[in-house]
Length: 428
Image (tube, rainbow, N blue to C red):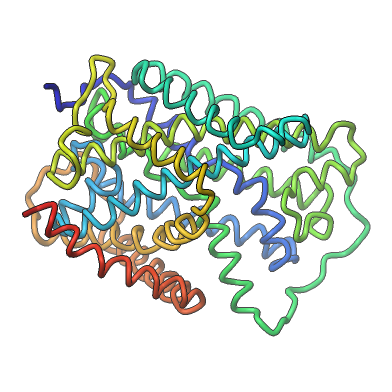
């Protein structure tokens, strides 16, 4: 029985999964949400810019853990080394469940978008959603090489779509309406919480490469640097797109829109505007189906290798993929499509993004003290100053989000508390 993943993936794959993993529906929806909170153009652009710079700095710091950890398994593998098996278990299970919920949700959304173009599909929405997610599970069963090639192609297409949208927006005549100042509302803190959550969601995925740590050819430092290069590309594309929105239609046009790009195109009376944006959204979601099956299965595989999941899911097929881990991920995703009650799980997993990022930053600090002489193929930029800045930044965001989303924080605490007896049973 083979339980080891082979080095089959080129170093450019890290760049592809970083860019393709970060760029998602957030950039199509996010500008409208943030424009509603920050309608002043200069502040709007600065918010996007500094949000991107903070994520870039966080990537440059936590990439040290990526370089040190020659394992696949994502944040679980990185956190376990710094904190031990229990903390890793909690984050690993939450991370895997969030992937299965996201797979289910995005499969449903793909069919919802397709139903706008072809209304007759709506009657078969559940069956078609299952077919879509099953198709990508089958692709992974064919082998990791095929999945990697599809991901590289998907990233290229998504990037070209964003560039084309940006160029079109630059040629849209500006709106004559003037942007207002930031509105004073009764629940302004909630508005800023939404804006911060939107930025985090839109930039989320900056360490996607760590889900494939032991499978990347070449030096670990090259993989760590590829993650940083991927975020630089994403920030550049996001800033150009937002600049085009400001200089073209203007923020008043897109404020509060669920699909800001489509609204901007409609403002310019462009033919087939909504259709083009819906097709772009479907392409992005299809790319994410491929990537999330690859990533999610590796979390379960890593947990199983450490005795925190069924031994079966750590078996690796001749095609280079953990076959039973993929099947387990597919079974849960299909079950969630049938049940349809995964919204809370998804919201809870989104709430965990911020504490996980904080845990990664603290992990760098812990390992610097505990293992000062450990081999570090890549070292964090400007440590300890950059690490300290990221620590305080994520700590403030964590506390702020926990205060605003108190009910979700309570459920998260309950979930962590109930994980202890499960962990004890698995490690007995």
